[in-house]
Length: 294
Image 1 (cartoon, rainbow, N blue to C red):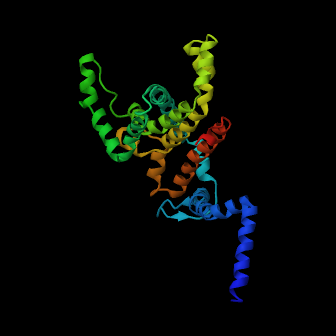
Image 2 (cartoon, rainbow, N blue to C red):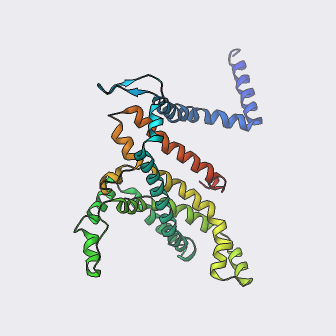
């Protein structure tokens, strides 16, 4: 009886302290997942960055923990690495732009035109491709883009032929894979667009194009930027689709994958390139307020 009373009093005082200090309560709730994030994610990135300063024995291919900057020097002085990095950034930007162009009319229909009772079903239909395996979808596109495949068969009456395997095929497949990640944020942004703004624009005599530029686009720009975070980062780091439909195309992910077993420190140095690019991209997108829309 005497021992439980002080314990109960301590519990009440602790509960009162947490009740008066909601920030402390939130910090304690988030401490465990944040600690796990720091150890598993940030810790692995730190190890990755540190291992990039090591070297590899040319005879045994074993990692030698001798600190140097040879790997980063090779990144900036070797032309092929610069070309692959720029090509990877270009592919990610093109995929993001195509996703925006395709996603906007789809999202506009699902959010503003479709029957409200059918909108949940349309959203489920948009999410359905995400339920299929990545490899199944990529190899399905390999069959479609193959020489004499479905795309060649469809274009043959028009005197045309498909792009085959290569950079164009890689862009097409990545656009298909990541398109839902762009549709959903734009759909959410358009769904929250007040009808009163559109009515006011029409009452003031604005045409469709002017309404889109002055009312709709500024309102959904954060949603577009939020979707681009997914499409850009996923396209920049992808290497599987390139191996399946890319032919001889090389992106930064392929170089990292091919050097993991041969030269781990060089692969780590290559791995820092997309990390730095994505961090810079996030800092640029943050200025649009998109991160608050994620």
